[in-house]
Length: 146
Image (cartoon, rainbow, N blue to C red):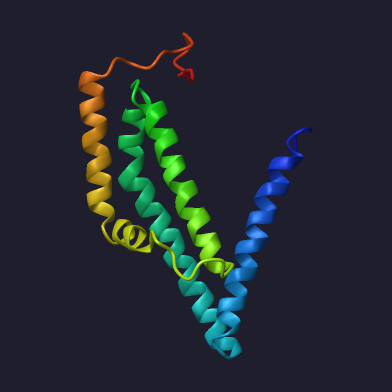
């Protein structure tokens, strides 16, 4: 492991630990026997992996095209800010600091319509590619942040 990158490993490991503990407490509360627990965990993990693969297949082509336009930095920051707002709202609800997540309806809709979300990003990529000037490059094909 490269020196100076220990913080990245620590950060990823701590997130995995928190997610694992939350999932373990959820599954533990179901009162499953050992055989059912293994089947439930296997099914859950396969479902998660297939869903992640679907997201990559649906979104990556559009994101690659979009990343080569001047629109991409604003798009990337906008999506990150939406994710930040959603995660803070979710965290406040889970910590019982708020009675409900005010963005749950939007989140549920987005999750329930992955093809529409992917089509919207694809349309944005096509429009941006045709109308927005190309993002600056460092001369080696690597895009520079603005």
